Length: 117
Image (cartoon, rainbow, N blue to C red):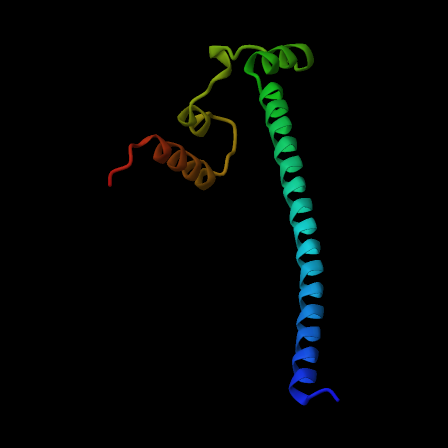
């Protein structure tokens, strides 16, 4: 008859073999998933590279200038089109919200002052 120790060793080795077999297939599955993720990352990097190249082409200043000349009716700003804030605030016959104009002038002049840290 089989001794108890022999039976115990046989059962333990069977459990270990089955566990190793299962572990092997889990590792194979995880490696497959890992490879799919790496492939997806490479595809995304290639897509980003293409998109950055397209973005650089679309934002080319010469191209944008040609498109604006073709589709927009924009002309060079003439000196007669400019008016100072003070001229707007002091023009007779027009009513403006004085407080809003003062705030606008204060904001515009605050942007022009250098920061003093």
